[in-house]
Image 1 (cartoon, rainbow, N blue to C red):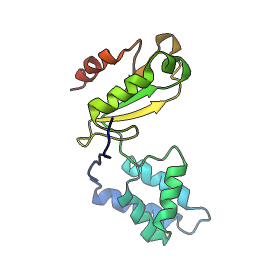
Image 2: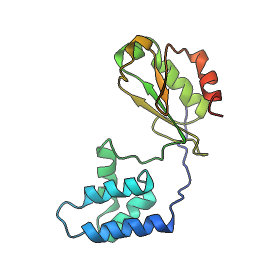
Image 3: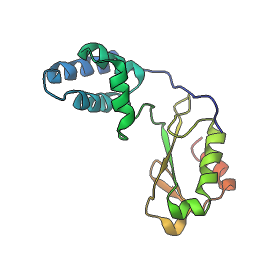
Image 4: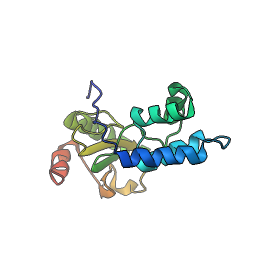
Length: 164
């Protein structure tokens, strides 16, 4: 299992920063502007890295801790980028009792990342989900929406090879 958090370098562009500053300028005087600004920031960057949270903090004069608290409270905010290949392992009841927990653990080991993280090269990200509606194929994982069912731990290498 991954023991050290892997970080993907932040590659924000000046154009993205300008877009974010424009959004902040447009919304800053509205009551409750923080959430809409954070949502727009995630649309612009694809996630909310600390660098983006800091821009929002500085521009709105809101403590970084508050922004981080909002970002970690609401599940639709992502603190890590998604990989080129987004892997999602179903940990719903049907899949879990048929071994999806072992599959998830094997993926963390193979990719050397924890759930919710992205490999440093930006190739793979790994998340858990609850029921993809394919219980008859349990255990199930998806890669960019493509469903792989009736998996065993031994199938993981073969699935990953398709994306190398």
